[in-house]
Image (cartoon, rainbow, N blue to C red; front, side, top):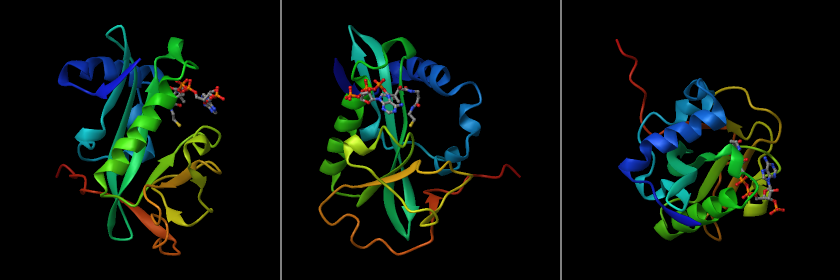
Length: 170
Ligand SMILES: CC(C)(COP(=O)(O)OP(=O)(O)OC[C@H]1O[C@@H](n2cnc3c(N)ncnc32)[C@H](O)[C@@H]1OP(=O)(O)O)[C@@H](O)C(=O)NCCC(=O)NCCS
């Protein structure tokens, strides 16, 4: 298994992976309101094996309490290759790279409540963050990127906002 940065030549494979994981309407999910701009290019990762793309993980920057922080996802592994450790390898490598930047305090994820705690994520109390769209219980999770990453977190509720405002198209 190889984890490396996504190259332009991978874009079609990654789009196919996303469609297989999240369906054709994937970009209509509320979380995409937080992804109006490009992902963090140094954190766009693919997992490959024998030159075949098996998984993808990207991160976007968001604004929380006036500070730039990270949003993990989408994360997806090829359906027939799930359960073989690709997702784990992508998340561990992504968090390691994010930490090395020394730019963000924490990472947020809206994801499976059982999947992310093994990587150090903890559940966020209901109402601490204002999220674009309805959330199922316990899906919103947070992980510090350095020792005191969560120390200055305002009590909330505070909005999670996109880094750039989406153009309305008028
Ligand atoms: C979720 C997903 C990325 C996991 O990738 P994966 O490569 O299958 O996961 P891994 O093989 O690395 O699993 C690592 C561990 O998590 C467990 N796990 C896998 N999927 C899980 C899930 N949905 N919930 C809880 N645990 C899960 C595995 O059993 C494994 O546990 P172990 O270490 O005790 O053996 C993959 O199933 C997927 O693409 N799903 C569809 C898209 C999606 O839901 N993306 C994530 C949004 S939260």
